[in-house]
Image 1: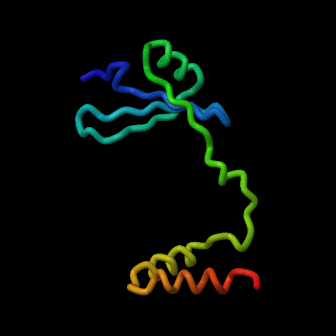
Image 2: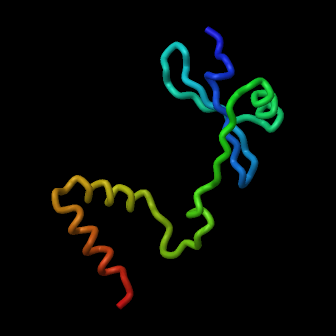
Image 3: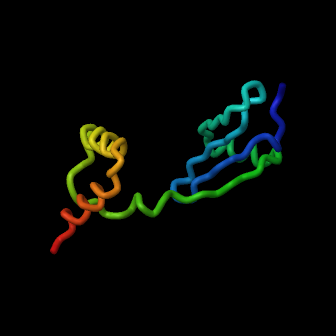
Length: 100
């Protein structure tokens, strides 16, 4: 089975002009995403493929403070979420980390 133009979507990031295209596999229906050069993006769009323009999240340009997240931090967080009182523990942790 061949894909038609209406089966694909081209996505272009307005911040860095990177491109990709997405579609659902006609056999298994899983979503597929592939990177695409500007040439491929132009070819697909000129063939009638719908284009979406998106932006990088603003959080990427925010300044970062504090220590770098480590794998053990993620494991500790996962273990915390397994407990019934996880929300109270996180509230307490945030309260303790805030300056007075």
